[in-house]
Image 1 (cartoon, rainbow, N blue to C red):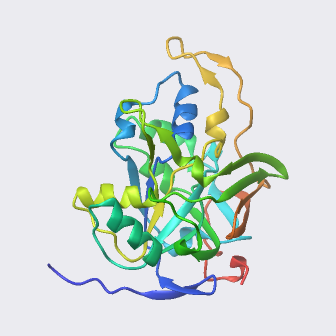
Image 2: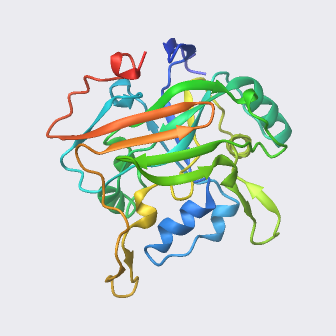
Image 3: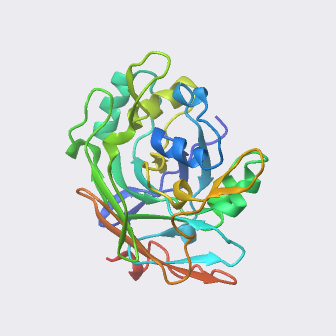
Length: 290
């Protein structure tokens, strides 16, 4: 080992936690994947059921927004989207390779919060022609909060799944009314009930020789119906022509997005398009609702 990393702890939402430093965000919900790809006339890949796809980005403090923060979006973004997710903050280093180990670790060492994975869909379309969506996911930043809840406060089943009602509104209009437990799906080859739960994701990482580190924020993936792109214009894959209009427009300045999650509370943010973000509102300032 070349050196040992120093783990910095900070006070966030009234809880002492390892400083969030890396987001590892997965595609955990089948409905989201089916719907977002269906708008482009593409079927879900069979590989999704056995191989957990994710992207990973740095979490600089100036790009982390808390409750009631104004989210500054560069004007270069033309298709701004929200994504309703649950975030899991890792507090203790480990590597797990079995579900039993992962479930036990999850209950004892993980904190849950709301995660809004702001996405620049126009730029993501270009990113996907290369190495993936990292650029479009890193341009804006992420919102988390309003507090952390120990995973053990939820009734977690043997597959690492729990009940947590979630809702999302835009300017008071209800867009999403769902539950984390909709992460369950049937495996097409075995017809067995399965889920990319947090413990299942931990196991996947461990089996690929990837440890969980304090400060890693693991994203659940977007809950079904949890983003605008799932309701974007439907495109004929052969002609490229629009065959069904979009249900919702992309976000604009002044739009307010509120995500509510059971036991965690409300995460509210308002959008502001700017030429150059000032990053003057971070999780350490008054916009965090402290």
